[in-house]
Image: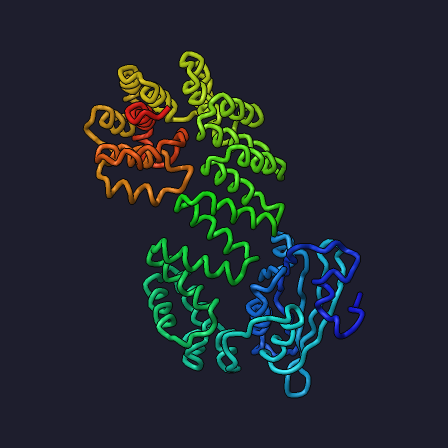
Length: 496
């Protein structure tokens, strides 16, 4: 087993590239449970509490990303660059902690550190070795720490009412158990304390509270604050990027996904999300570059082609969109139940060739029939309606009425105007605001129509710059209305 060259270098050697391995911009540090070698089962709670204290104290440190994991397998799944192992034993009246760091690439221990004393003192010492500017834990009360470590959160905050971490764990536990109202009440009690420790715990509690209250602005503010304090935390960066996407601040969202990729270049989800963020921001070249890189990820080649098709489709480049959709279908005809072929048909139609689009859609319809898809005829009828052939669509559904009467009757009622899509401006705004791009095409189209009807043509026009994707969220019964409405709105508002 390799040891650090000097005691002073200690754990910093492993994080500062004292070895011959290349230095990384951000070290991904996986903290595993510590092993209890005392023989005293009443101390088992320390196995989880000890690494959690270290993680809390060094979170936000420059060039370090901490991840709490339960197993080495989890550490590998999180693509950690260093694994932190530990164990503790009795030594006199206190405890002795031994910490060892493993290089995940070389499968070799590269540093070690010992610490003695009570849990807080020892873990503070370890945290400062990782990061000299480590933040203090949110309590110095040993009894409160023990209560928190055992999951006795109410007792922990009774012993120290400003113990922010214990309040946060308590609220998270309640929220995770489905007790939203109780979680919100706990968060509110904690936030009412002006002396609550620490700023990070306060921001986490504000995030919990805003999430429970469905307060989008509050959630965004809390996430922004947390990212400022922990700029390497991938889960926080991802959550903030998703919030910015929901708020349609696509350039900000793209910037956050780029930050994630700076930290974790192999993050396939971030690459795919970056592609859509760039496409929604109108940066098609950047979107294509991200999605082509995403296609090099393991098992994502077909999904990458589908995503490329969608971003070109959204931006009105229908020939390119069709080409990618066709490639995706040829690579895997079963991907997304063959819907890439259906999207290729829509792209071909919007490119100006209805007869050719019908031929593509017929292949899709035949494929669905061969797969015993009970909705195949309904899908064909909605295609006919969406492409301007209302009477043929109704006739097609009438032929199938004996096979699937509930679906057919509801769809016919929509087409006859007996059931109508939402038209109220305030209702549609709420539906649109809650819909996640790019799967917001239905609500975005109907909201734009309501805005135009109310005389707000400029805002309506802004919503019509990106084309809705086929089957892009909302109520399937109204999907066939989307393209006729969208294209009529663009004509009425003079959008080329």
